[in-house]
Amino acid sequence: MTSTPGSRSCIGWRRRERGSIWPIFSFVELGTYTGKAPIRELLEVDASSKCGSPYSPELTLSRWLKVQGRAQPVYSIARAGVRGVTRAYRWLYEELGFDTVILVDGGTDILMRGDEPALGTPQEDIASLLAAEALDEVTRKLVVCLGFGVDTFHGVSHACVLENIADMVQDGGYLGAWSLTREMMEAKFYCDAVEYATSAYPRMPSIVNKSITSSILGWFGDRHFTDRTQGSKLFLNPLMALYWAFRLESISSRLLYRDKVLETESYFELDLAIDRFRDGLPQLRPWTSIPH
Image (tube, rainbow, N blue to C red):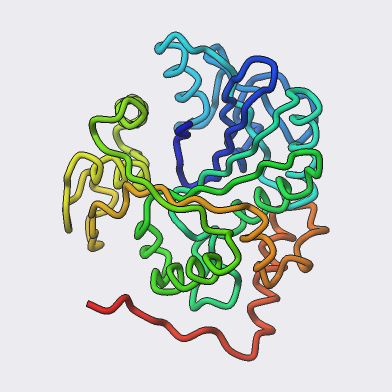
């Protein structure tokens, strides 16, 4: 299964009865959409939904799926704390009866344990991580990361990323990596979906997704595909097209501030709890660059 990553966590799961894959985006401003809301933290977006925002990736994905003859809803989770996101996951499990959860991170900041020089944008990732962990009935839970290097913009040290992965190698939490190549059917679908979204919002292309698809197509170095990245230095390279796979529990067990955020209801509480944890650390791990 290949899901479309982005700045939000994307979750895919398989329904037992039909072998279906259901795409879910977390941390959506639900008030901008029309659609069925079974609980406060969840909205079902399909190709007929409306959105008052000039940028609506969930709606775009729904319409692309319809064009592909694979129409299905995209379940969108509200911008909330861990408890709110967990309620959404619980409803989805009881409704869909899935047997597998795959969290897809566009980038690698979900691998940050909390004491690195910078964490990137961990709020969405960590709420999704801990919400999925809370589903005890689901025994197969994975995290995959696509887009190694794109978090440099948010200060992530990728030497720390590799150190954290090495730590998970020791207990079997790291499951390996594989490349998306331009010849793969899944990669072609992914690139097509990204181009469909880019054509819908030409002034706001996804920097994460476009970096990855450009790397799949062989772009290298400081090449820019949008004015949004002008003034910054890019390093497009084949590593961005690598999927890195992990056991979810291996990541969550290493999260140093796990207990600090479990009871958060709102996104603000989650953000504040992470900041307070960081402020209370005697020191952070030093910045380390990858030797070259």
